[in-house]
Image 1 (cartoon, rainbow, N blue to C red):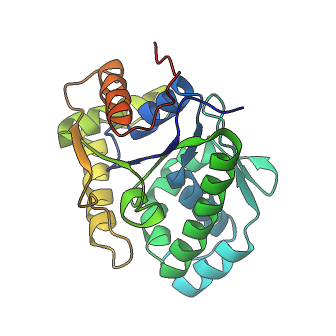
Image 2 (cartoon, one colour; image 1 turned 135 degrees about the vertical axis):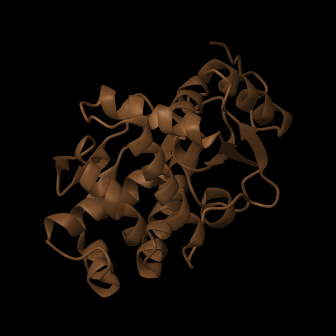
Length: 240
C-alpha cells in the first residue's frame, strides 16, 4: 500500500542531532519506510567484536562483514536489527560497539558492501510503499546522491552531548555530559577525516540546526521541505 511520501528523504549529520528520532517519526507520519544505515555498520561491528577480531585490522573486518548474516527491518514503528537471527538492537548501542564502530566503518570494503545492501533495501521499499526516510552520515553524498531532498542536521556540541548522555541514562548506561562530549568529539573527528565517504553535507543539502528546536518543530520543517520538493502525494494529509 502506497504511503504519503513519494521518493527518498536523505537525512545526514553527526550523532546527537536527533536524526534517528525525527527520521523514524517522519517515516511513520508519512507512512513510509525507514532505514538507519548506522545500525548496519553497528551490527557488522558487533560481528567483528564477537569474532574477537581487531577493529583496526581492515582485512579481517572486511572478511567478517562479507560473512555476517544480518537483517534490518524498515518499519519505523519497530525497526528490527538481527545478527544470525538474534535480536541485537540493544546490544549494538552499547559502549563497546560505540568505541569500535568508527574504525570498522572506515574500511573501504565494508562501506562498498553495505552501501550496496542499503541501495537494495531502498529500492525494495520504494517499489513496495513508494517512499523511505534514510538516515546516516553519507546518504546524500554516496548512498542516494540523486535524492530530491537532502537534509544535513546539526546542533551545538554541548546540546548533542547532553542528548547522548540522556539517551545513555535512559538505556541504563551511565555517562556524564563531559564523557558524552568527549565521545561525540572523537566520533566526529573519526567520521569526518576518514578517507572513504567522510561525514560531510551534500553540496545541495538543506542545513537544519536542531539545537533549540523541539522534535515537532523539526518534523514540521522536514514535512514542509518534502512538500516543497514535490515528495508528498497530492491527496496526502500530513497531520500530527
